Structure formats: structure tokens, C-alpha cells
Amino acid sequence: MSNFPNSVLALAATLERGWASYREQGVFDIFVEFTLSLNGLTEQLHRLQLPGLVRACQELENTALSFYGERDTHPISLDQAVAIERKLSVILSELRRHETPAIQARRVLDNSEGKAAETWNKPRRVVLVSRAGHPWSTSLSEQLGFFGFKPESIRWEEQPTDDEPPLAIIFIPDVEGRAYPPAAITAIIALRTRFPTSYFYCLSVPSNLQSIVLLQRAGADACVPVGNKVSDVLSRILDLVDMHEQEMYRVLIVEDSATAVAHIRRSLTQHGIDSKAINDPRLLLEVASEYRPDAILMDMYMPFCTGVEVTSALRQIPEYQSLPVIYLSSENDIVQQVEALRLGGDQFLTKPVNPIILASVVKTKIERYREMLYSGQHDSLTGLFNHSTSKLQVERMLNAAQAGGQLVVAMIDIDRFKVINDTYGHPVGDQVIRSLAWLLRGRLRNTDLVGRYGGEEFLIALPDIDPEHAVRLIDQIRLDFGQLPHAHAQGTLRVTFSCGVAALPDYLTTSTLIEAADDALLDAKRSGRNRIVLNRPTSGSD
Ligand SMILES: Nc1nc2c(ncn2[C@@H]2O[C@H](COP(=O)(O)OP(=O)(O)OP(=O)(O)O)[C@@H](O)[C@H]2O)c(=O)[nH]1
Image (tube, rainbow, N blue to C red):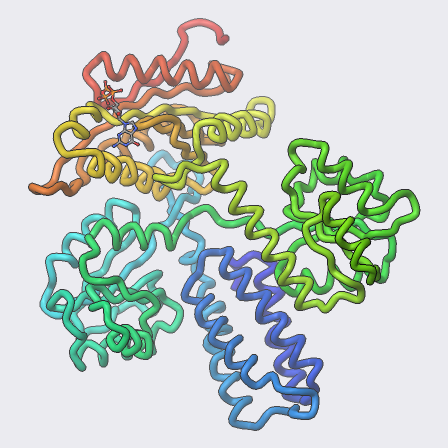
């Protein structure tokens, strides 16, 4: 399990220990603890974008919850314990199996110059299953390969040779829109049994409940309806492995009671939520600007001032206007509670707070808050950072680069894009933009910035790499993009892009770096397009 973050390893170990001690003592409270840590593990896996493992954990959670009962129904029966144990051991052994770097979405960049190997987005294995080789299998395989996946095509009756669970299995029926025949269901069950944690897609499923239920029972996670195009399927798979790993939720607790803090932090940790506590509200702004919380748990009555006063002051500061604030108090007076909410709080929880309610309120508030932040910072067509956030990110990367550090900025623009729109229509143009976004996201490291700077223009920034190395890397992406077939009503078309590059220390500020990359892009366009130009000033810097 060494490649998982420590928090996942710790939760998995807690889960295993928790179950062992429940089996020994059969006590209800230990069973509750066990389900709590299971929920925490599910959250963590969700954040790591491991849908198969999430699914397995959710199934176990459902089974455990169905045996929850009351204090006097514990210990549960042997049959029930065995049912839990079977599911638990699948999860734990799958976690251990991921010792290989497969889950890390990293790829080792070519190491031809004897440089230390750098970790890049690793291609992920996707198994395509069809009976006698299907045109979709060939086309999906080709496209997946372009986006950095490792496709493997097999027949219904075959099994993949590699024991490592693939990221996804895609089952393709012979005939579109017909109920899956028994032989297909048998093949799905066999694959699902062997790879319980891979994400399982069944394509061209007729839109009737009977077919969908049958496939779900056999093990399908997603039934893709008839009529979906290859690009729709591809987009689902790319969404599945969105390389941007979610950061842990962060909660700042403002509470003067050390006992209450310990209690709250314990509940949050069990749900995979990070927290920090301060006992003096006067420290709030300083700590918040450094810790960047996703929510604040605010005690109502503290020695220096009340939680309501702090919250209404916080709401005066633009960057904290929509940060969720949840009050904690033993206040039972409804009028006081309503007033507290009117003055800027989002929710009121009465102490002592039930740990499950606390975690679920915190998670719901944070999810909404992050969604709101996400839509303000991302472009809806590609999911990439939008113009202003991309610039802000370059600024951050620049600040993070230590003296003598490296940062390469590149501006990419699709060639003759107007002609593509005019000839094939806007939807085809949109798909070309999305394809380039996917390709860049799949090929670059998690630490690199990929933003949509304008209509058909992308801004990327790569830290810790020298300009020549970055140019070679982007140039390879350029060559591969030029080979990518884009579907339109009459067939496929090929598209190219041009790119301009500038780097530290030739240019030292965000605006000069971007301008220099833009100038180089203009040179690339002027000198014939479909090329990359590095802006290297002959003397000095800006
Ligand atoms: N389909 C689609 N088109 C867009 C989008 N945003 C901008 N465009 C179009 O992109 C085209 C950009 O065209 P130009 O700036 O003239 O450049 P070009 O045709 O790519 O030519 P060169 O850059 O000189 O190679 C315009 O026709 C815009 O309408 C978008 O989100 N979707």
C-alpha cells in the first residue's frame, strides 16, 4: 500500500483493526466506529479518483448499515459477519495490490539523456471487450492510446493476461440497442468477479429498466445508452481519471474548549477531513489566510467575543463572503439561532453534536462551496482553469519557484480554427477544443498548469523543467495531436496547433512571461503554423 497517501493507509489499518476488535468483543459502539472509519476511507478513495474501490467500499457500507440495528442486536450473526468480512477482505487486498504505481496516474518520461527519471502521468489500462472485434473497439482503442491510456482489446470469452486491475472495462455488444445475450452476461460476471474494483461500462444498452437492472446485477457500474458516440464514451473515461486529485477538505475550528475541539477533530478525522483549531478568534484571519479552510466551525460563546460577531466581521472581507460558517452551541433558543443565521452563519448545530451529523453537515457545505469555487474558476467546455484563474496560477507558480528555480510558460493556439468551425460547424470545433484539453491534461504532470486562455488558445506552465526539455515534450504532444482523428459528419479531420514558449529567468514576471510566449506564438503562426517557437532574448531579460 506504499503508494497511497498516509491518510488512506491509516484509515485502512484502522478499519482492519476495528473489525478485528468488533469480532472479538461484539460491542455495538465498536461497530459504529467501524462504519465511521469505512465512510472515511470511502471519501478518501473518492478523492483519489478510484471509482472501483469507492464502489466496493460503498457496497460494504450498505451491507454494514443493513446490520446496524440497535445496541441489543449485537454481536451480529455469523452469516452477517462473514458477509462483511468477504467484502472487507476484497477491499483490503485491492488496496495492497495497488502497491504498484498504477493508481498514481504517473508516467515515466523518456530518460534518454541520462537525467533522473521524472514522474509523469502514467497511462492507465482500459480493457475493451467485444465478441469478434468491433469497429468501436478499434476506434476507442486508437483514441484512448492518443490520450495516454493503455488500451487492451479482448474477446468475450477471453480474460486479460495482466492480474493488475484495469482502470476501466468497456463491454461492447454485437448489436446496438438489443438486450445483452446470456453469453455476454456470463462474460461480464466473470470479468467483474476477477476485477471487483475496476470501473465497468456497458455500451449501447437499450433504455429499458429490465436490461439496466440485469447488467447492474452482473456488475456494470455504468450503462451507456444506445446512440452515444465514441467521443461520448471517451469523455466519460476521461472524466473518470480527471488527473486533478481533490485536496482534502479543510475545516478551521474556532473553539475555546479543548475537550470540544478533541471531540470534533476526532469525528472529522474519521471522515477523512483535515482540521485545525484555534481557541482565540482574534487569530482567525491570520490562520485562515494560511490554512485556506473550506468551512469554519464556530463556537457561539468565547471569552473575547461571540461567534456571531466574528462571523459578521468575516463577511465584510470579500474572500470570506461565501465561506461556510457552522455555529456550534448549546444554545436552544430558536430566536437566538435565527438571529445568528441572519448575521452570516450557514448552519446551527447544537452541542453535544452527533459525530455523524457533524461530518455530514460539514461535507455537504464544503461540497457546495467547492462546486461554487470550481464553476467560478473553470471553463465549462473543457473543465480547465479559465483565463483569469490560469493567470493567477502562473503567478502562484512563479512565487513558488525559489531563486534560481525553473518555470516554463507556453501559449498554444489551434491552427486555422475558424475554417474548422465554418466548414464542419461549431460542435465539431468544440470537440476539437476538448480533445486538445484532454490530451494536454493527460500528457502533462499533475503539477503542471493547463488552462483555457481564450477560445482556441491554451496557457500551460511547467515548473522544474528546463525550456529545451519542455519544448521537446510539448512538440511531441503537437505531433501526436496532428495525428488525432476528429470525427465529423462525413468522416474525420486532422488539426494542428502552434505554440510559443518563454521561461525563467529570461522573463521574470507573469505578464512578461505570457507576453513573451504570445510573441513566440505569433512567430510560429507567421512562419507557417504547426510548429513551436522558444522565445530566447539574445541579451538580458525584462
Ligand atoms: N467551436 C468553437 N469556436 C470557438 C470557440 N471560441 C472561439 N471560437 C472560434 O475560434 C475562431 C478563431 O479564429 P481566428 O482567431 O481567426 O484564428 P484561426 O482561424 O485559428 O487562425 P490562426 O490562429 O491564424 O491559425 C473564431 O472563429 C472563433 O469564433 C469555442 O468555444 N468553440
